[in-house]
Length: 248
Image 1: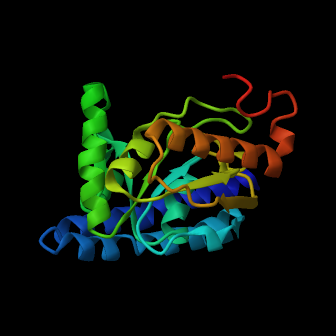
Image 2 (image 1 turned 90 degrees about the vertical axis):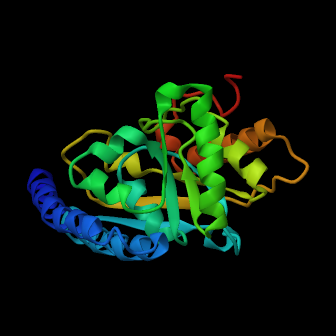
């Protein structure tokens, strides 16, 4: 049954995404925020498909922690699910993403048509400058910025190195950081065709203010909260893992 559901989802994803990508190309002449609003109407459609076809729903904790204005979201990254769902959970946002994703047929074309932060990861230190420069511009436009500090998707129960780019952006832009923990990888694993039904829990942590705090400390606070929350909510993934921070 999981295989059939996943196959139907893959077909619907293609049938819905291709027309949206073509639509995104046709409206290139509209203002960026208008394009963003029109193109991201794809999100609630796909979230409906994810819920009713794959049987994956989500429960939100800590919505009251969201600040009133734009912020930098530092989120756990386990699957493709959160790249869709966070757009429904938070106000209008954009992602820090690899520039090569913009060349992916249809999906990448849609990404290229909305305001975002596309970086060249091979640029080394210049990649951080790209994040800060483009990120500050997006925040001034009123968009939130989502950064996956571990840089890539990690399996449930594991932790990658938290890179400081998102914290540096928040510090230099003078906006707060919002940490996010979730268990999407439990049901939608990295590069897995077959998805499993279930309830994803998304937890939004208390705002981390940046005034008077160094970027490294901001990043460390975000990591500490996210990893502690992951262990609190999903202890079954960490039975054989050391507590957060013990590896430092």
